[in-house]
Length: 96
Length: 386
Image (cartoon, rainbow over all chains, first blue to last red; front, side, top):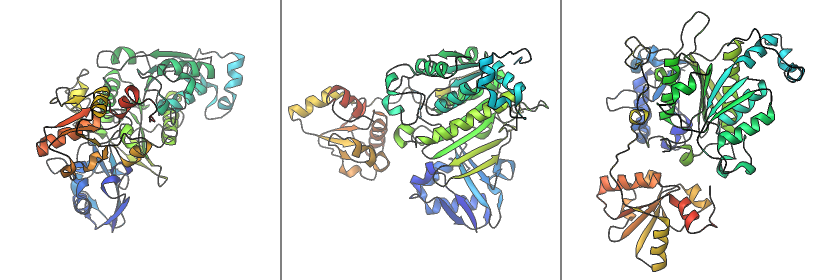
């Protein structure tokens, strides 16, 4: 089994679950398994074309999947998949 | 950064002694710090510790951009400030505090919002930029200006319990340029998808940790001591105390400096971040009008879309339906009488109203302008503010 780590900003969509075991395969399979368990998470991870959203980074161990095989990047047994979202601190839009 | 001719007074040599005696650092690195000009954008949670450490370390010239004023709710994390400066512009309070800490350095302040019109002229005067801003528009603006000007951008960001640090657009000794923000996040999340710290909160000590790391990277970039966090993203989870450093690379499709660049000047970052300036108008009510309805005994429903923890701090008797569950609990909202929806300051309640109008066709909803804070200001001053 591989492990997928959910960052704290997204845990409100996973009932505060911080990590989940997923079957080995590829990143796309792992994310699908995660979003099947937590459907609310889907719009925060996947864009309208079914790809990883541009404001999300996925790392397998410490490598960016964009420098590997993107969503098709293989996930080995015991691999750790990290979701790193864009965070900006305070406010979502600047004060006028 | 011409540091060869930098001189120190006796007082300065004494003050920086613990730096100078580190063999890997020495007088040479201290000279580089004094010669350096660093622009810090945002003097809030991240800017507070990073400014304190940079000033204490002896960075010779520090610029600060911020247009906010100090509020009491800042003080749980913005350790530059105390209650005596609540209400003052942050840059003025910061300058006073930092000059008091280190009179041997120069502080320049910009009490203005950083915009596409002023960013290049302000930033070109500095060697290094430290981005501690609080919104995506300014993040992209700072990034793009740094790339266009060829400046390193020491980036730090926080949310609730998570922190991120990296050094963008760093040019190493071989002349190789590292990745920038657009390589990491090619576009921002849609507005409303990620809650803000004002809504979602932030653990006060977290910006202290992450802002201190930002100051560390600024010092490393200036002095050349160690390996700057270029091409690597540090991520910290305060809940589990787990941290990880990820490798990040340049993206050939980056519109700023990829293979086929299409951006050669600063643009409209509010538009890029999909911040709606022409959203469909919603009906509003002021706090004083709401009070009139209440005292007149008008028949209306009051809904509070904040979170339970905020409701427990202060409430004005509204039915609590947090924004995240507004659609699933829409049947609890009246269609037969006026409904006033409020949150802390008016943003979430506006989103709730748009969602209810679009999905369910409500036409009887009013947004409390300025939220419960405005109600506290204008109607009931004894209410708690947060």
